[in-house]
Amino acid sequence: MYRGRLKRDLDDWVGRGLIDAGTAERLLADVDRRGAGFSIGSVLSMFAALLIAASLLMLIAANWELIPRLVKVVGIIALIWVFHIAALIARSRDADRIAAGALIMGAAAFGGAIALIGQLYHLSGDTFSAMFLWFVVTAMSAALFRSGALAVVTGALSLATFGGGFDSFGWNIGAHGLWAWWPPVGAIAVFALAHWTGAIRAKHFGYILLIVWIWWMTILERAEVYALAVAAVATVVFLVLTVPRSPLASLHRRLGASGSFYALVMALTGYAYFQLSGLDALMTAVLGVVILSLSIAAIALDGRDNGAVRFLAYGAFAAEVLFLSYETIDSILGTSAFFLLSGLVVAVLAFIVIRLERRFSRPVSEVTP
Image 1 (cartoon, rainbow, N blue to C red):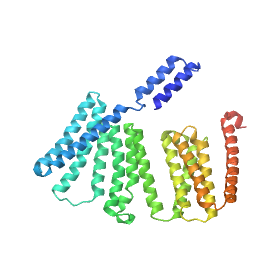
Image 2: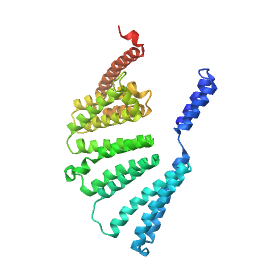
Image 3: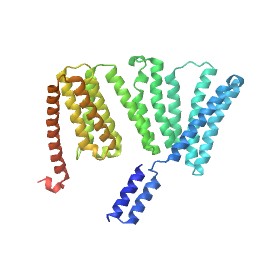
Image 4: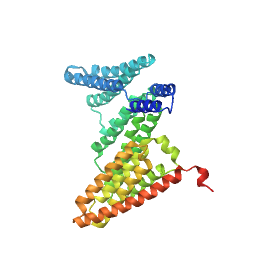
């Protein structure tokens, strides 16, 4: 997707004489060399590895009772070694897709080994401990092989590990302190692997893990006021990351589009949760103005360069307008008054944003005396 859009832009710039054809070819070659484009072959290779791993596990399950216990254990351990050795050989021959597929099958075999040994020898344990072990070993393998595909698998396992805690301990936070505070550690591990392996998309699992954890810890287990507090903090984080000439502008560039996007997700969902908690009409309208204002500010501050933020803000704005007009306004006159108020707020925000854009677009020498 990115490569196709870039190629169209480069062709347009060449046609308009902005750059020469040689420069356009070198830019496109640099993108291809860094592998930034979407590869259907890589995705199909990952699917093939998952399907083969599933078929092996199902084949073993179909003949479960006929396989001696020792053969089961030795066989599953042998599979782990075979897949990792195959990955090493493929990596040495620059067959990265085959190596990635072999590593995924090796990770799946290790997960099967955990379940197999626990079942054969009736080892006591819980789902969280088993998933945590699977996560740790897969993360180590991803780091050693510097495998982006395995980093993505590790990210998925981080969510599965957190979910396994609910099966083991229920919804009570105090039931197991280690599990309750594990998600930040897991998210940091996922972020580190995404950076080390170059699998930037894997970091989304870390963000999702943090958001789910924050919701569980501060909102679902406490009260609506915590949702408002979390939303306010997330709003400050989003604004600090995206305002022009922010001291954290360099951090925003390193985080990419995802940092501001997930901060905005946390802010909007927190405000929405508080708004849906049975407030009176006045407070509901106030929260509505806050959500609409934040959506517009998000588009103005980060929407031009961040498509995810732009579409999220569009969706939040439309959903909030529909919610307020359908749920909270009892008469046509009241609806008209609300839209008039919202229109005035939007107009003021537009005026402020335009002035800020003009100010920050001027050279520094013109702004400072």
